[in-house]
Length: 207
Image (tube, rainbow, N blue to C red; front, side):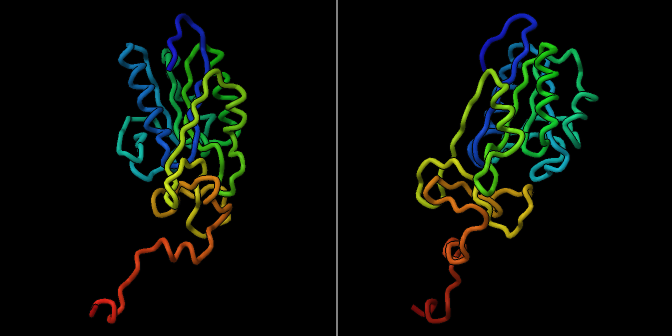
């Protein structure tokens, strides 16, 4: 996170696929702001209850208490206007309203740090991240490790059957894939079967 002096507000964005360390990086930046004795306020979407109802939690189990909101506009009703740094996790759960909210907060002199997916399960730009990237003063792109081949992964592969844009899940529902291994939508059944642990037959056990 860059050092900003005076009342200048700005927007920092951390984006990438699942399992790439976005929430971990968000927590790191917010902790640094607190070390610098800045007032920090953190928000997360109410629908994300995978690891905790009222904390930002990385897949590596780093945690930070946060306020829960049902939509982006609710952030403005809960904001402490004395806050100097505002963190928002899981931008992809908030939709386009987050763009205007982030702009209002930055225009009021706050440093806004937002983390979220940049592409959806079909590999398309995931709103509101494209709009936030255009507005941001600082952008960090994180990469995961492809579980199929070990190369740098930029995609989030969905493993569960659903055509909904948003399906809350973690390991078991999603995995990181590189450009070559990524399959838009749901991967082929034979690949899923290959990825599952093999159950030994009686003959195998006898051997």
